[in-house]
Figure 1 (cartoon, rainbow, N blue to C red):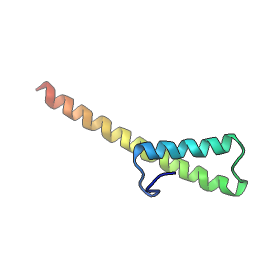
Figure 2: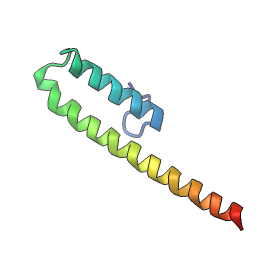
Figure 3: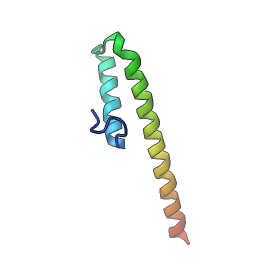
Figure 4: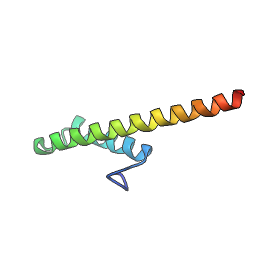
Length: 68
């Protein structure tokens, strides 16, 4: 589980997504928890996408400056 559940770093978010998926795959998740966990996974996936996009843009900017 992420150390900062509201704003985990990329690796923490990936670990939490993997934990949620493993519980779902192994039928370890109560049906009452399913919707909340799916919502949490969506939030984490979006957070990861934002971090990847931001990192990609930053690297591209650095490379453009390097090519000058």
